[in-house]
Image (cartoon, rainbow, N blue to C red; front, side, top):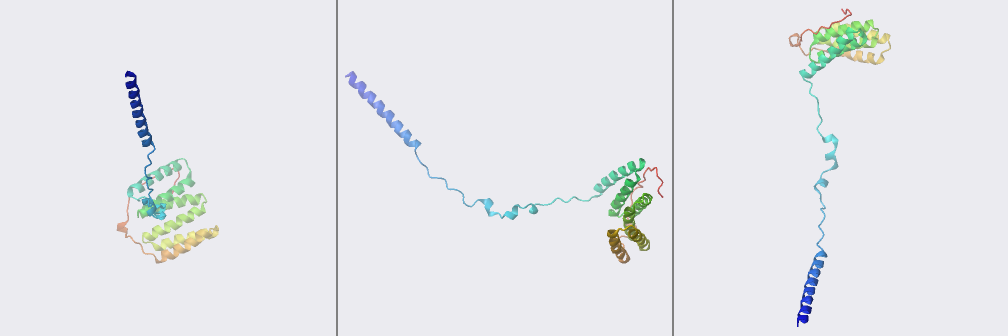
Length: 208
């Protein structure tokens, strides 16, 4: 009797374990339906041109009085250094750069002063190309200051110097500028010119 009960019990346990294994094996092999792939992705709806770099906003630096003052201080420092160590040829270009800054600010008197200093040095250094460029800038400054006669005189001198030294590109520009000056009327009156504090340089070389 005991033997019979033991056989029945072991058979029941075996059947129970087999049933559990069968259920687990079924669960392992359950196949779920495949997830459908997205056909219309949002990125595909945008044209390729919308990602072009040309569509991105460009940064344009603002030309403020503060930026010009920083540039002025930097150029002035270099000019003082070059004049102190008698590097006159480079200092001449420094003066021209300062003049261009002052022209942008309608500070014509200062621009004229520095162009004259630059021209004096460039003549002494026999830098004819730079002298011609200075005369052209000086002519525009004088035209803005209401003196077209002297402006034309500067251009006439620049034209003569350019022709004598084979500066053909400068000759073409001078002709255009001369025509422009003859018809030009200054946009600003003398009362509208801007002035700044005296920007004097400590120089070893006398520049009249």
